[in-house]
Image (tube, rainbow, N blue to C red; front, side, top):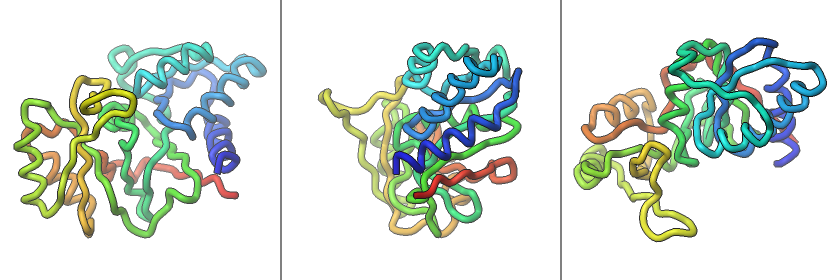
Length: 218
């Protein structure tokens, strides 16, 4: 799938215009888009500014000499490029298995166009499986109880290479919620947003009107 990811990432980078201010997502497919943007900056003297959605993306951008800015300085973005964990035919998606969905949703909300780049394995007929939510540590136990009330189950995400839970770039915990079925992703997103202590969920259902999908295939 690496070649498929590269194809999608490179095609997305070609959509960026000189002078654009873009949101740069997190993940392996976006890394290919950044790689192509770096090439275009060198070959075409492309001038851009990027708003990173995670520390990882910011560190990569610095290494690639991609100039960065912030939403405070540029609250309106021309384009946001990001991946997804699942995308359905209505362009609703689940994101956040990398733990960056809160900042990713802020960036998508600010962007005129949301360009989603995935390999074909991420395209599904309906959304299912884990829905990550970012949660205040103060409310973690009560949030877990409320998730059960919604018919799901939740587990605090634990780290790899460290003891204890994963801490997001915003200093919060990540809970992976599992639901046997998600008949209405829009409704579930609203119900999760209404639970005190949940900062944001990984369901992206409100931006389909400005979402474009690029699928890399074998």
